[in-house]
Amino acid sequence: MPALWRTRRQLMTALAAAAAALSLIPLAAGAAAADYPSKPVRVFVPSSPGGASDVAARLLGAKLTEMLGQPFVVENRVAGGGLVGTEQLARAAPDGYSVLVTFDTFASNPYLFSDVHYDPVKDFAPIILVARYPQVLVVHPSLGVRTLAEFVAYAKQHGDRLNYASAGPASSSRLGYELFSHEAGIQATAVHYKGGGPAISDLLAGNVQVMLVQAGALVQQSVKAGKLIALGTSERTRSPLFPGVPAIAELYPGFETTSWVGLLAPAGTPPAVIEKLHDSVAKALATPDLRAKFDGQGAEIAADSPEDFAAFIKSESVKWGKLIRELHISVN
Image 1: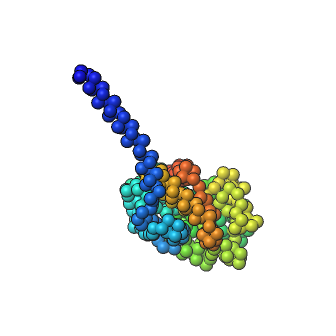
Image 2: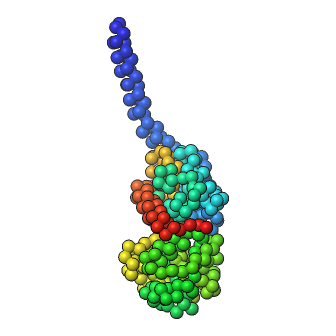
Image 3: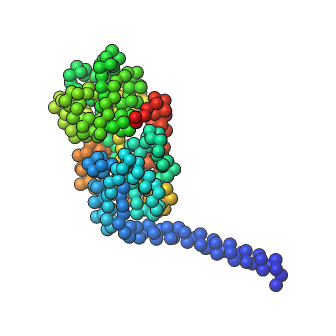
């Protein structure tokens, strides 16, 4: 048998074997997704217990455990302001057995901190945007303003007396207010707290005058009781949580900011596993009991597709990166 013919025959045999192996990949991936999960799933949460992402993770974890028959175990990883836990997830095995329930600062932290070792766009596989949490600009009644226009006029005249509260120097409440003040052309002194709870307490006491804050139950109740004045909501359209309160975008077109919670996996996680997780979470969020619990948190269920969530993360990263660079915002 000629050597050339043998070589060609060997080549054709190798190509046929390779093609057969490649044809089995979708079947293997499908089988893996069908069997998933076959062991406990670790749910990283880069925040302390009690926050929006932690509450969302525990609500979803309990429902997914019930639906899929394996424990979804929530692990709070708050070292380094949550950066460590996020980086650990980025380096975890991309097999669907380590996932991350994160929140809005996921997209902005890489621009605020010099020692962030993850890329929010490249290092993760978005699964689902779980929920949005509208924000509202509120002031203490002692300020004597009732509308957004009155507040801006006051701030332009008395910015040296104005203190705004935030849940922390890297928080969405800080970045959201900085975006608003930039659009409105006003100034105020920042007072950063270790969490939203202490910030709201000082706002209610009148120790600070204004805050762009997540519209949770306490804030809603305080507005209804007249303890805080709601001037504007942060999404492009009015919020049903605050009837009669205009969107800030009505005075400053294009303004928009929101708190959010979403579920991600490490980059490289099989698409079939991503799809199964997405569909399972979407079904969980559609159940009346879980929807009622999220409603109680002031959340708006999103349940976006993985592709939509990926585009949202990219847009958030571009938006906040630009603001942080232009205004030279730092965490110091």
